[in-house]
Image (cartoon, rainbow, N blue to C red; front, side, top):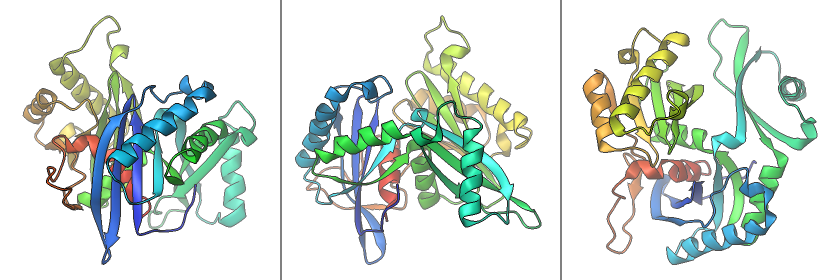
Length: 319
């Protein structure tokens, strides 16, 4: 969903029932966080909820309540979809394909992997930088059901916010990394989104998307309830497998860095990973380089900055 650039943007994310917002404004060419707030929605936003149109008003009320309570001043917003609601594919295409020819080709590629007619989907795509001497480039394609987008639009019709774009949590997190950390174009970085029942690995090459991989803890041992030590071991095991399978190196130590974010990050998990691998491993901090304006005596940053990675990344989309 395209939109014109603006001097202010509110990023909105819903993960399970956690609702978070980040307001960014641009002053003298510099992006600053002017407000942060978090609350709850009464019903988790997932595929099951999207079947119930009576919940639209409820989501609108929950978003409005947090928006007004925190005294947000910017009315333009970017809403984040959970990546479980979209399909993401990296597709190689001829470097000479441009304009309508590229658009037609991408529609054909998507058609090969979708069951329903293309009219039921919205397709967006973005080319990655082509390697020198190669006659093809990689295109990152994102496919979402049109009904999902329309449902989100209906939610914001009943709020004080004007929906300017719909983004995906994976790309919001990568945008935060690009804005706060450094990596050369030939280095790999792992971002790990820690969730309730699993995690999502996102690998960047430099600051560009390289691959994404979802991992369900229960797939390893369905009968177990995992503690932090077991989760850390599973993360290490799965990360090693990704590195070997995709030929990123020979070990975890071949990565430039690993950053964890989301509500599932705990101090024991982080400490165990740091003690296991000789590579930089830390919580992702969306406030590392982006300044936070004073909020009337409130702490300059939340105690768990990694939980605000997604809404901050959403707001950065418009600045």
